Image (cartoon, rainbow, N blue to C red; front, top):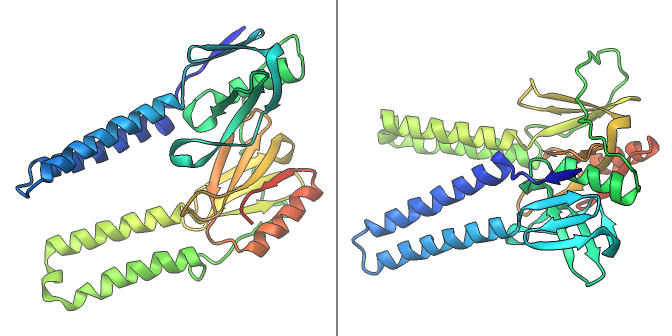
Length: 299
């Protein structure tokens, strides 16, 4: 059997498209500018776009795995030459951010990183390596874990959440929205249609952006539930027995997040800016009591 990697349509191609559009916008802005030496900045942004594309594709080469070995781009490695395999963990990716990755160390000291964020079928690749290479299984089966859709109204739930308004994320969100609404309102020109539309658009953008950072969590004897303070319709339910690992995760200039890695090696990340350190530590204790592995990388 052979599995070929597939780059993720959103996390790879759509992200790269947005970056290229941003570089293109700034380059056009400088090219049409009449300022002295402005055109030079236009060429700089074009160069930055080329470098960005190069880094993205370099960090996501084509991967082929089978029973004998793994091919990364043009390099071929045999599994018999591998010294160590970390199926889950962090690897340094684009702009030196740490991403979830599978790391493989070979006898020639080459280190191969397979970044989850770049590949749509990374769970299948990880499952293959785990079953065939690590556990020496003669057969490979990949079954995607489905989220539960049950009514949990009768479950005894323990909730871990902060305040949606008086937490740091809530204060940043509502404080800026109130500032943008009330301070410019003292200017008579702000009562015109265009300024009103600009203020409304900015407030909506800021509300949606920060609301996505306000997830909170519930745990019962059987389930792990993810909800959101503002997007009340969000409800993701995981069976505890389907969870392989939970990661307390953080990226630069983002609130703390919780990443759920299921036993099929799929993973989802939920920003939770309203939770305080005491909530995270209490939740870790509850999860460990339920035999769930917790990797703490930020608290």
